[in-house]
Length: 310
Image (cartoon, rainbow, N blue to C red; front, side):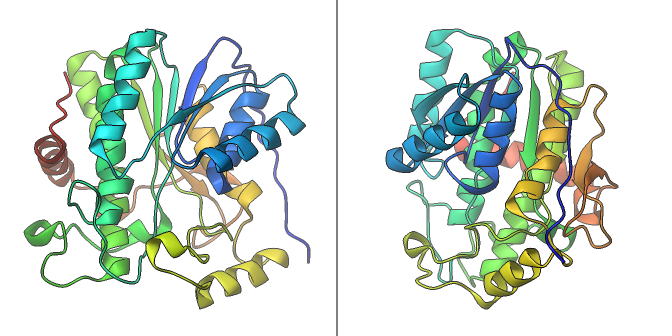
């Protein structure tokens, strides 16, 4: 059975300015292409300029009139995040859509960001938390939609409050789950903070299901020189339309979360288990339901990054 495809009609986004992290490949590239194809001006912050240039070429091959620009961003560096925020604030143009999509997954050995945080927590959560905070004036000016990309891994697990940076004993998958639970808690707490502060920002969260992207593939920069067994199995299933999605279908929940006229809080693939299928609203997983945890994560993230919202 060949992989299934699904249609998602996006609204006209002409005149809207979007920022998509992780847009140089995989799901992020698909999200950026979808928004650009609907008329949005898309800013693509990337760490690797060559990959960014190739992504721009790929989007323009599909959408010749696409309005795209590359910016430098390393989410594992709070200085880099702050520099991008300062540059965009200096330009002064409102931002209407922010998709916090980029991420790293399960380095086999403990790695740290430039600022000393466990790599997954620091990149997947703290980098995006700080970026959103730095862009807050522009997001408020654009009455923006912020969409944060969590993961099916966040269905279980917990926050390791006693050792957020895994100083004592590193477990790559547990650390990944923590980072993606933190992403989800941030997106949900942003809903509450925006309402309380009258920021005018809408916040949604999404997850892509499971698809054969580069997250589990060989990534020498995170210490993984060969593909994992998991990614080889995912590729096999995806090519046959079984159980999991494709990079094309995996981009749809975030696109729906970012553009739905009357958005739900959480979107993901609709097949049983949430690994694949058409996009749609879904119930919050248990690790994301605790508002006290969300408040604690927000307050701790402000302390760790030095970025305060308000």
